[in-house]
Structures are given as C-alpha cells and as structure tokens.
Length: 74
Image (cartoon, helix red, strand yellow):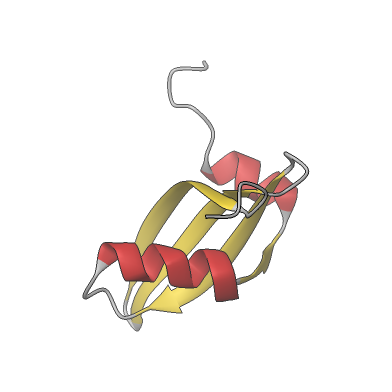
C-alpha cells in the first residue's frame, strides 16, 4: 500500500427519498483534510465508503467541518 495515498478519516451517511448519500472526510497526501460527496447503493459499506472517497465530488471544506463537527465540542 502506498503510504502517501489518501486515507479515509470518517464517513457519514444520509438517507433521502431518492437514495443514500455519503460524505467522506479524506486525509490527503499532504495531510490536509478534504471532503467528498457521492450517492451510493447502500449494499456494502466498505465499497460505498471507498467509492465516495475515490470518485465523490468535492464538498466545500467549511460545510465538511460543519457535518463532521464533534458533538461534545459545545
């Protein structure tokens, strides 16, 4: 495995009337945290998470931090 490859840090799943959407927090080769969003089929969580990480559209960083905000940070 390439030690400089992007790493999935976390993923959140949202169910809508039209299917499932995943938002992934991805740690890049440079150590930055980026976010990706993608619809998935919902049959296999590992495959779906990898799909979001590798093929998802770029999700705005500020919105990503809001989605993945720690609940106990208040």
